[in-house]
Image (cartoon, rainbow, N blue to C red; front, side, top):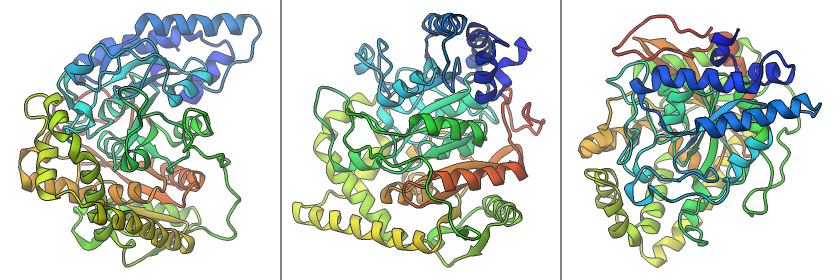
Length: 481
């Protein structure tokens, strides 16, 4: 059993530790051995916390021996994005400037997973400062490789976590998402990912000192888990939800809402905004729709999502306006070529004036209202995560055409982050050797409905990981079921 520990689900790993079938130390060692075997090929884990993880595991084993009750994630190893603080470890953001920025405390989501018994096993790679593009490449740690095909990006900005989870180096990953940064790497690596509602999980996204960022950074960025199965994603969700005095944005909403009467209506939009969708992604949406119909959902194709182009424009203007004053200093931290993605964005989208910015804040609320009304009619929305299969590394930073192509493909992720609603990315299968998937979007604070629907899809279409890293576009069967 020990040789296969890293292949087990997070739920099964924790149960085995609680029942004394395995020790937490054995579980951690199994993952450390897996990291030693495969990370040199994918470069996902940046700061390995081997001894700290073993010490934490030994503490769990001592508590079990003493008869203490263990948490729902007892002994489960997880990775943490380089932008999220682990006490006593540098939070580098992938840049040389922050190489020695040692965190004084765990970020709230790390603390919550620890409290449930999970063990941070390492930081994970991301684009430099989360700003260098969608591809996971950082100044400090280099490129992370998609384990399905080295010629395709693993996505980002939480690509290190997605790769670590997909290859069995960790059972869970902790990323964050402000427009697809959890969901896109989930699709590109064949795992599941959750972007929660704004205010669902407590967080602390300050970088230096006590000052908080502006409204866009406060409202758009949400921490979220990645896992190989929807069941593990649900378990992480239950541990992460709640309030924390360090984050006044987090609201005390129960993790599960009231059951809906009758079959749950699902709106299906395969091509949001009518900007085009690749045939394999359209087929993935169709397969997921059929799975939901088979599960008893009331699935209906609708014309479109509300006000997509208007929302994309407002998102861009608000974020650029907030970001523009600091750009001259920030671009110096991005390393060679790391500024290209944001520089093209700044050139294309000029900052708003003060009067324009105030109007945009009203537009933001108005678009959120339109989406709330839409989701009142359709509690769930099924659509693409990214409207293409995984693209080549760095496409978004290559030129304006590449940047626009990627921005368009991730449009449903962008707009759902803008309106603050939850989304769950779930795999649907493998096409031409690459994973494909969809996302389920729901009403604010109804992550439970999204997870239920994602589970119904997974039950019918299966899981794709863990996998061994592949050097080319391969079609060999996955190790997982």
